[in-house]
Image (cartoon, rainbow over all chains, first blue to last red; front, side, top):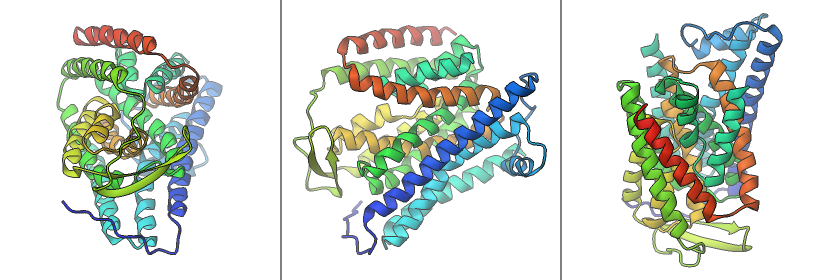
Length: 130
Length: 265
């Protein structure tokens, strides 16, 4: 395998892309932590029994419940967990954009392969579960 | 509450030893809480995403991560993780516990090897490979430049590490970091940061499978993940103050005892 590096011709300094990736990761981690804390807090306030649902809801279902007027503890916790699982996917998506900006076509392709594998597996898993 | 504190303890120990939370969290959930192995692994893999992403956010900003190498190796780790996640869901909990016990033995040996490794290693770096990168070593204030040798070989190790990650709910850095350092000549700091950067994507790949199979209980995963995340920050700050080989040996003994307990679970 020969992967000789070409000098980057982009007008953007490399640390701009690094910063984007960093922001996406921080948003994902702290956003999901916030949702999980909120879920545990609502659960503590409502003092309901600690019973998980019979089967995990789909991400679409979680999103629909989040947009509804009655958000419960389980939905908030699931939303946090799903956001956390999607954070690396968002990071790979950011890498695609970052490498596009840097005009590094070879690594746009590499990032797209990783993204395609993750998305294909994500949707295939959901299909199998359904 | 117990799960949260358990997460803090396992996350702290993991970060202190550079192992990530999974190595301690899975046995803790399986042995102390009697959780089925698949649920323990699912919880651990989500916690691994959290600690990896939080660490990577800092390392990417400081430009210690070799972004391009990380992206290429992710193809290998994701392949391995998908295969591992699918395999895990075909195996019984008992079999997974036994495989985990063997993993703990390996981890103990690697930890013993680490205590014998010289502490200063960034002096001689390879300059005739691919993926050229440099980072500022904050401890010494110097800029370390390096290139990467034998990429295909390290990709093979990444497939195995990804597979173990998906199968057992750990990050897999314990295998990748020594390989990246010894095979490819990457300085330890860059190898650790790049491996940690890849772990989030690797863990996400198998996390979807466990989630789809219904192994993720929000009442267990939420407090455990929050605990491990808090514990990892605590572990890093303790690590800056306490350094000791004796401590490592204590943990090696603990890991060996946990390994025996997991095997006969």
